[in-house]
Image 1: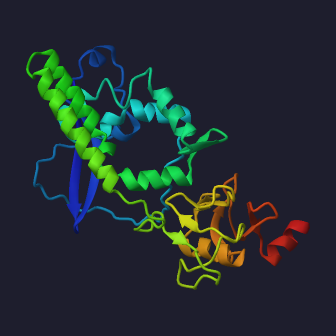
Image 2 (image 1 turned 30 degrees about the vertical axis):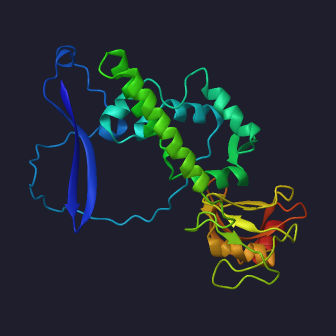
Image 3 (image 1 turned 90 degrees about the horizontal axis):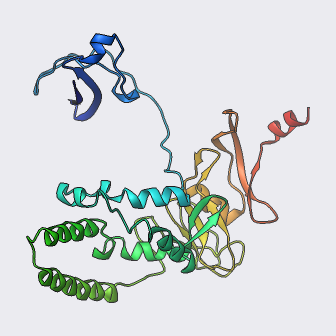
Length: 311
């Protein structure tokens, strides 16, 4: 028998977390002499610690790392995420109610994803699922609305379980659904889909004919179609004209492109030399980015590197 433990310490206002396990009784492993099997992040055998105890600092070290965006969903990973959506619900009772359900049912989840394709909310790019401009716009509009609250499914499952046990009257649930339907309908009818999304998540780049100002997102038309606007999203920057198709993914060779760098690319057709790209074999290199003849992103290496490549 063992206790899985998470210890949270506070140092200079910063939280530090350590996970481990404390063996209370070895049981059959002690008889057979077998070692304890633990997950990698719980391999530490933590000492006895009391709440409020002050611990000495033995060593400190600053590590410089880059955060990476979550990988794009595949159809398989999206199905899995829908199945386990209850893990994101904070209320314990609702989370338990969703434990066996998630979003949809095993019979309907594939149909839900297919509807996303049919309505042009997502598209396939090899194995990855890429949100379209239309899909991102819908998400931006409803993400804070009650209809998009995953806890709703948990609440309904909890109530249905109570009806099954005779603890809640079916008519009460039906009336609650009617009220909820009127509320979300009114909420959606009052929602406004604007061409520019605030907070840096879907801001418009463009709308004019001049070059972008040096400070960040200025005004310029899409460099490819020359007519539509370019919108900035968390993982991609793309033209709002679906027939144009200009798309720039923020992550390039494990380097996250900034708004300023993308703005420079869109307005000038080429960026300054950017450091921090990483090759497939893990070698770090620097290069500028530019559009090729097919409006795909390509590397443009400094002259000294081109010379080295010719040798």
